[in-house]
Image 1 (cartoon, rainbow, N blue to C red):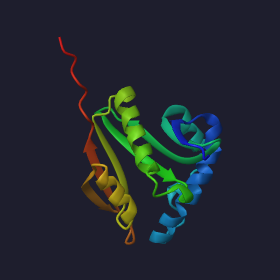
Image 2: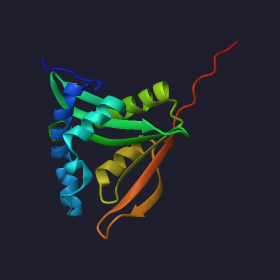
Image 3: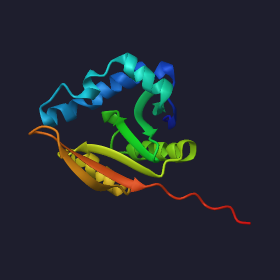
Image 4: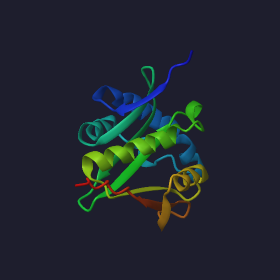
Length: 166
């Protein structure tokens, strides 16, 4: 019988596995845009460890192996910035990306009072754009970064908490 994938908070020991997975997952994005200097491919381990320590970083585990991850922060106006949603290539197209995104949204709303969620992806990243639209995100802006890359920013409102009845 196979193991189930679990999602929980990342710890300091996960940082190296997350970084290796990030490097693997962003190869296709780098190839798509012809740029292997994108930040996910050049991020130092120390910077990722700091994100794990100070931010909200979730991991998907298959046994002891990290097979997915996502990160988020919430700014002072309640906007949750979600990024680096990654799923191991062999685990893609099985709903894990959607599970990770739902888990980080829930965590950021419950623990950090997120009022809305914001993320971005490249304009040619059709799979990412499809996933985000399917999960309720709508494009709010597009910004040209280079002649080869425009970033599409997408948002959705966080569900309002249920008021306690008197």
